[in-house]
Length: 406
Image 1: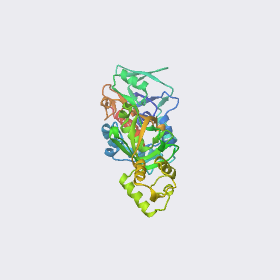
Image 2: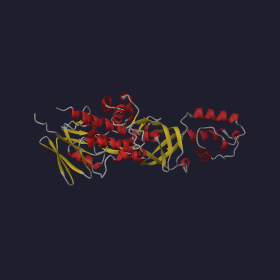
Image 3: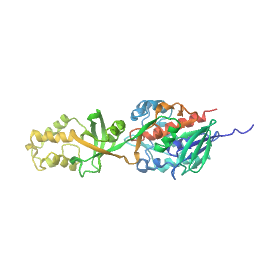
Image 4: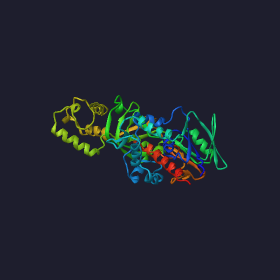
């Protein structure tokens, strides 16, 4: 019996989706070539989570999981029903990469090093004798007689199947436009708010466990941990709101008003706490009064912007002064005047229109044997391992689809 000739797969992009797809392809059926334009592969995986690699999130119900995706939630429901965070954790542990679930449900390798994840992917690809070529910038993809001609600056490759996992670079999207894909314009998602406000001045690093942030103009509110940075405000509460309202905030040119509740409790509840403390400690100086769960530095800053002397006796405060303190704590208006991308977690909204994709296989509807996954698609999530999980799940589905072809 003659040996079955292997088909050729070219994976464009040596990042999370591309490598995980290759790691799951059947080496008995396919020769696989990964083309990466940079000098190193898996760069985003390497720097994710401060180098620890936030590989996924411990949410195992697809119906709940999709709620973390501002774009793609409907389409990902079926994807996650086939490969979800529990499957990814099992995949890694089968390859001797132990993972842990942290208190906030983010999943990391026990080693606290992204190299554990990278090595598991690279080892799979090497063991299958697949080829990886770096510094190969793809210039065009042309379909000819049921095969693809992939041109880089220096080479040409012929392939039976193409897996397109380039991330959201404008150049890679232009190649897709030439193939008649509909592209949704790119805008940043997951960014911090630039704010110049006396309340935040010189308080970089001050954090709040459960703040509430709303954008009145967009009728949007989020809650969660928040952090004062050198530029303004960051942390999950800010990042979530930036992701869910990425398109609207781009239209506002990142100039808008926010309402911040640093305490994360109703202003009337804060008033009750204040009054109770005042009754029990009538002779206490306001500057040394520990009424709320905030740092002394921030408390003093609130008193400063409220124009109240730190040495003033708490029983001497007027109703107007108390109300001003409470408003600065629970309903502080601030003007956002720009954005900063969030460290290494930067992602974009926009990319290939999801109507172009068959999510049962991740194959393009308009080009047979052409598959797409990862950030090139108009799918993005809040921070916490969700963006990587979409990459793993989509890439796994492509590999399964190809492996099951006759």
